[in-house]
Image (cartoon, rainbow, N blue to C red):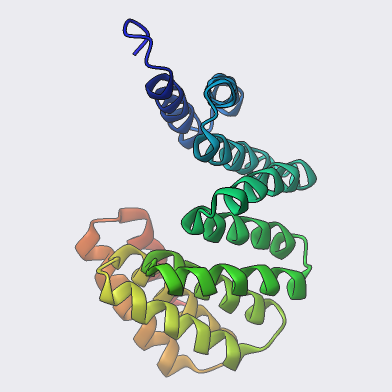
Length: 220
């Protein structure tokens, strides 16, 4: 891309390198590559690329616990996605803003953003995004002690993840549902969910999760 002076290709590649470093937890290096990507996107007027990079920078600050800084970048990303009417980008960014309010205990505000995200996910057919958002809504209700409501949202999330074959997500959710049943002294239901979770973890060959699921079952 550098040889043929493909600026759009370079911006995308720099962003991808940044993604690799972010996934590895090398946040300083990731930011360096995102900033290079962002500079090119600004120069060539690639608004979609710029919004995606802003969002990724927000994710780094979120991972580091710099929530106000993360919110600043998410809001910058959101404004651009709104401007170019990128519905998928908006759904993701709304969800990320919800996550900040969620982790800070601002549950009503978080729910508002999750609901906005889920509405778009439904409209554009983003099933993984919808399932993840339903799970987040369930987590909020659990944190508030609304266990029946939490279970209702978890069930909706599990149903979608089953439909799309996202078995790791199904296993994680079944574990969470099992824990919720355990906390509410519904041991038979807890055992049923944890056994199904364990079965999936075994099929996926996830040794750490298998051990944890077995320990949870033994504790019932």
